[in-house]
Image 1 (spheres, rainbow, N blue to C red):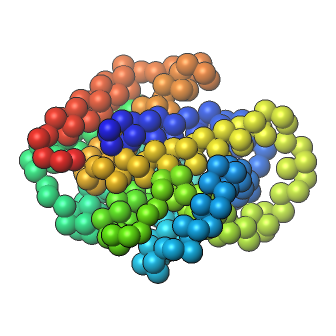
Image 2: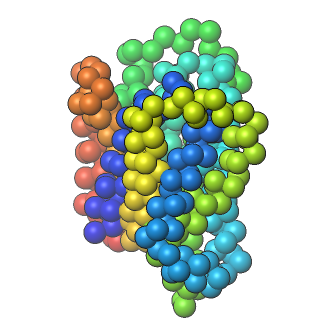
Length: 298
């Protein structure tokens, strides 16, 4: 069941490319992030209500620390590093570097969580890594022109931040107290609220008022999807999966995100897909099957 939750979560996360396509031309980065988190927070409060407040009061300091770290790395620093890196390198090169996320997540799982690492797991993660690189266009469709190493470092830091977010999703359940209950939907809401607060000042510095006023109806609909579905629902499914799967399984299944993004782009945005990207999709699916077939709990 945990793998099903992860699959749903990462498919929904991949749909963010559709929502972003309706927003990115109108609003700057942190304003987009802040508004999506506003919708996410409102959705969580609407569905959780008093349960969120009661849960927040009952959480230990260690759990709150992890939630704050998730908000810091997963939403705030990730966007800081990625947007800064894109000032130095192209989106194609950035996509290739962020394709290392499954491998980085697996490494962090081993270093931070000390989870059992089997040969089958290593094989699955490496296949997922190769598949993600193919989906992102490497090495057949990308020419590294005007490549600046500092940009690659920034984007790699963004990938590490994303991996830390995923790793903390597993860690918060491994070290929770026996009487401490953190429902996935409440967890997603608390992370969103914390991230929203972190993004407030950078968003205000962008002075977005005129851009917000000019946002068309399609943009507001995209925000509802981005905040309510891509953030809250996807986070909730991922947190539910993290309770039931080890970090290596989460790392491999994270490769579903670029597949989902690619398929959504093809079906909705009418973009084309190359044979190498199709092969990458097959490799990622194969990797998830390898890891899912293990007899050990994953």
